[in-house]
Length: 77
Ligand SMILES: [Zn+2]
Image (cartoon, rainbow, N blue to C red):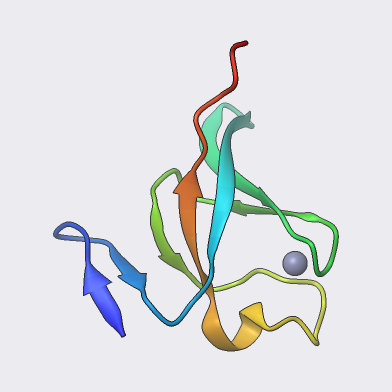
């Protein structure tokens, strides 16, 4: 079930939530998720919410569900 979190974004309650880290890629802010299935980083636009998977593993469960990106605050300790 998809639930709006603001005017543009949703989360999908049936999809897993995964940790994202902010990176600058070619001068653009991106959210990066290190995928445990294809073991490669997935790059997304810089916002929390539900995304289609960009997975290189054709057996990845993310192809069916997508996932909810959630930004993990940087650990400055
Ligand atoms: Zn992947």
